[in-house]
Structures are given as structure tokens and as C-alpha cells.
Image (spheres, rainbow, N blue to C red):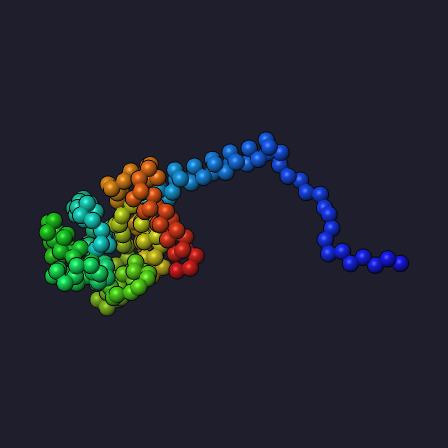
Length: 216
């Protein structure tokens, strides 16, 4: 009687022909191209809520601040909250210590009234700054006994979907959260891969959104 101690055995395995590999490559290229073309609309939704209050992140540029002023003047928002943590560059040269305060001052200079703008500073953190800003706003609403039920967050392009996700995690079901993504002017969002800034911004925001979705 013979005893076999073989650790491996041979099995047949089907592999694609060159035509099969070509078809798979074409399918993969098509899927990749589809992802490239649709990633900006996915990351930058425009879904505002009727009424309620507008929320602007204080670090956004002046173009977005002007868009916020136009949005408030053309729709019936109760007020505009401006969020943001400590300014981490040039603070000793500025009279403002947080992005919330600097952003609120910008909106006031652009024509909004003091009864329309509320700065809500957030504490300094090393990570999850958007989440921390949302938490600061929730705490402000709670401490003032505010009955706000609708918040629409306005922010920069592909940052919008992740921002809304984090705000939803903090303030729902207390408030519903809408979002307005402002189209960037520093690169073409339709052909974002053609510029280094567009490529860097889109890839980093896509990775950050996946991270927020899975682990935040």
C-alpha cells in the first residue's frame, strides 16, 4: 500500500483569450472613464432646503461668500451661521482668531446685517474639523433653545457631499440638512483632470468622502 504526502495538486483553470482580455480592458476603461466624468456631480450636489438657515464654512473664498449673500437675499433664510475653528496661519496679524469670525466679518462687509449673521467658532482639533464645526453649531442651537429644523450648508464644490454627511451625523434628527455646492473658478470641474489643482482637489475629496463614510 502506497501512502501519498503530496501538498499540491494540479487543476485546470480557464483564462481569457486575447479577445477576452481586450474586452475586459475595454470594460475597465469604460468604467474608469464613467467614474471620472461623474465624480464631480456626485461630490458637489446642489440640494437646498426651503426656509430655515444657511450655514457657510468660514474658510471659503470670497466668491463663495458673495454667493452666500446672493442666496440669502434671493431666498427666505432666517439667518446665516458661519462656522470654523482657529485660524492657523497669520492669526497674530489678524483681529479675528477663528475662521467663523473672519467669515462673518466678510459677509457683513459684503452687505448683510448684524441680525442676519451669527459666527459659531469651533475649538481647535487636529482632525475632523468639519465634524467639530457641526458639533459646535448643534451646541449653539441647544444652548440658545433654538427650534431650527432646516439647515442648508453652502461650501466649495466637491467638499459639499462630505460636509453634508458630517453635518447630518451631528444634527439629525434635530435638523434636516441640505447643501449647495458652489462651482470652483480655479479649475474646470467638467475637465478637472486637466489641471494639477483640479486633480489634487478631486482625488483628495473623493478619498476623504470614502474615509468619512466608512470610519468617521
